[in-house]
Amino acid sequence: MKNQFETQSLQVRARLVNLFRKLNSLNLATYRLLKRCLPLVFVISFSTVLLLDNLQSAIAQFPPAATIIQPDIVEPEILQPRQLPRQEIRGVWMSTNDFNVLKTHSGTKDAVTQLRRLNFNTIYPVVWNSGYTKFPSITAKRAGIPFFFKGADGQDMLADLTSQAHRQGLLVIPWFEFGFMVPETSELALNYPQWLTQKLDGSQTSNSAAGEVAWLNPFHPQVQQFIQNLVLEVVSQYDVDGIQFDDHMSLPREFGFDPYTISLYTQETQKPAPNNPADQAWIKWRADKITAFMVQLNQAVKARKPYAIFSVSPNYYDHAYKFHLQDWLNWVRLSIVDELVMQVYDTNLANFTNKINRPEILETKQYIPTAIGIMAGLRNRPVSIQQIKSQVRSAQQNDLGVTFFYYESLWNNAQENVELRQAGFQTLFPRFARRSRI
Image (cartoon, rainbow, N blue to C red; front, side):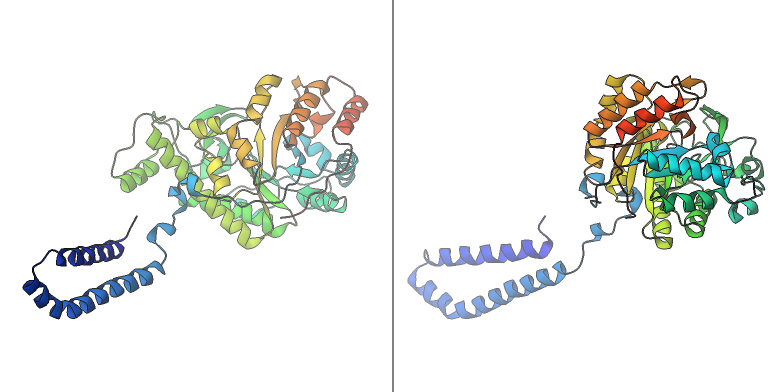
């Protein structure tokens, strides 16, 4: 769009052209009179045009106000994500179900050795689950959370795993599994009830795979500071390669009707909060707030450890945004995500393939290492090695890595024996694919 000075300059030029055209139609006496004044008219007009052009050039040197962007109101379509080197992710989550493996030094060593032999390259150990840290945390202790997991010999299990993995060339990216989710009976929920958000009817819990849980308010500055402090403890105190946040770094859309959030929304929009949790403006406002916090969290992590991989493992985008206010595609476009592992726990191969070919995955894998989270089995729901193979092959054919949930279910609690399961994984990854820090 032309600015004011450019428009005025063009207007002056047009008027001069019209003036010379009209001179030709005047009678001789009038023409001679105007001819004597013409040099003065020309000088004034020329000076005006020159002055306007100089002002226009000077103003052009200043950045337009639109370049100063607040993270929570960025228009995604104008952004260009940075492109990171392609690295094939071959990962596995180590959940609380795997702590029997990790509680001894020898068990940890055997697990890492087995993963290296089968050509895995990334381990995601849980460090935040059920309101407890899996490492000694000053932040948690100050919040009245006295308990954390130790090894059988009192060792720090995260430090031991990181050391063992690095010796064998595997990355370790600790996993904040529960995000903003906490059990309603946890010390955190009981000690800080003002940190919890609620539904429209005032209730504070929802049903999840972890049972009935409450949700920390992601819009509350004290909650944000608590989570950020936990994250910074991990990246500062351990030689880890990054940090990961999954689908619980979000909020079910039914929540956000607590007094603090309602007041904040009214203050910022000058409107009352809608009564419909699915209202599009209400969804976007809350999603943008979570995005702004993730931008802040990324900046804090990178300030402590610039090479740390900032990883996210959400559900597929439509579900994540519409039902959990998790606008992870915007996070990718804002260049705050260094790798993405999208969870697809679908037993139907056609549905699985459709989800990993969605536009947001096709876009994301152009810029950052991208993988698909695959279910290797649960204690009460084993998954066959044939299903695992077919899903991995589908991901590989689409230039995607894979990460399995979870370690023990790779070959324990399975339909097949350990040897057959491990032989199956060996065929999936015949050669090692080394990953490097960014």
